[in-house]
Figure 1 (cartoon, rainbow, N blue to C red):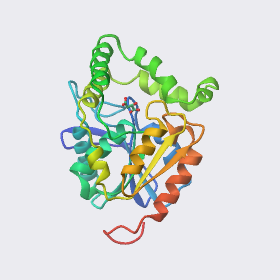
Figure 2 (figure 1 turned 90 degrees about the horizontal axis):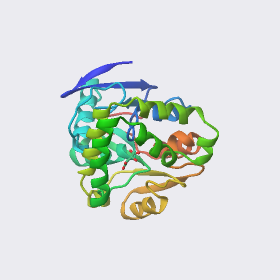
Figure 3 (figure 1 turned 90 degrees about the vertical axis):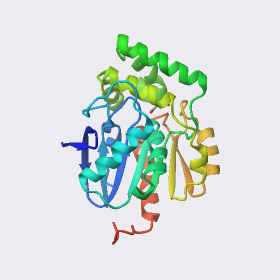
Figure 4 (figure 1 turned 120 degrees about the vertical axis):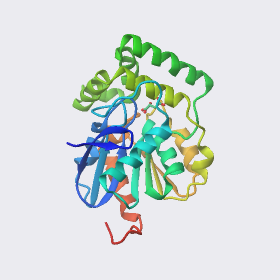
Length: 273
Ligand code: MLT
């Protein structure tokens, strides 16, 4: 699996399938493997591009603070370095969604459509932002164990945790082995992110919103509110899922993704995908 120099950083990415490029961007503090239910699915006519963001998985780590805008610029540089010139479908979960709004703001010409899962466009409250700063310091000092313990019950539906599903265990391992610096830099970046609800409300792109019906981090009611403000968005609730809907219930998520991709017009760069 390749690594590539993408602007100022070396990024790891994997590719599966051929056709319409769908760039899948993971949440915090995860890596590309959270999209295993999509890139190993039977959806045809899709080229899944699944990178690890700066500081996560096998990508190069930056310490300090990494803004959502920086992650978006890294992804645009990744597409350049890969020679992907035409528009792509951007697919992001949670923090991957925060990066998606910046992608739409800074690299709009890159996007044909968006799939945004379990995410929000609003900024952190001051209290949440302060909590992230403290958490960043704690992870740097003590490692990610405590963060992992507190996050796992929020990420997954309780039945998946109780039955020790293999993907719960593998996601936990990814979190436990994430770089302290990478985690802290992302926490500080998320704490600083802009309120992009106005951008979302003016986004004239086909958008599919997915949300686990049991998501406690980005509740379905909040995503319903977001969907109401967006001119071309369709929200599909994903049953039997919490925050990691595409991983927890790939059957329902992929059905919605496939139907959405089939409705897209062919891309301007030529031909059908
Ligand atoms: C994520 O899944 O990326 C995080 O829950 C995002 C956040 O902490 O706001």
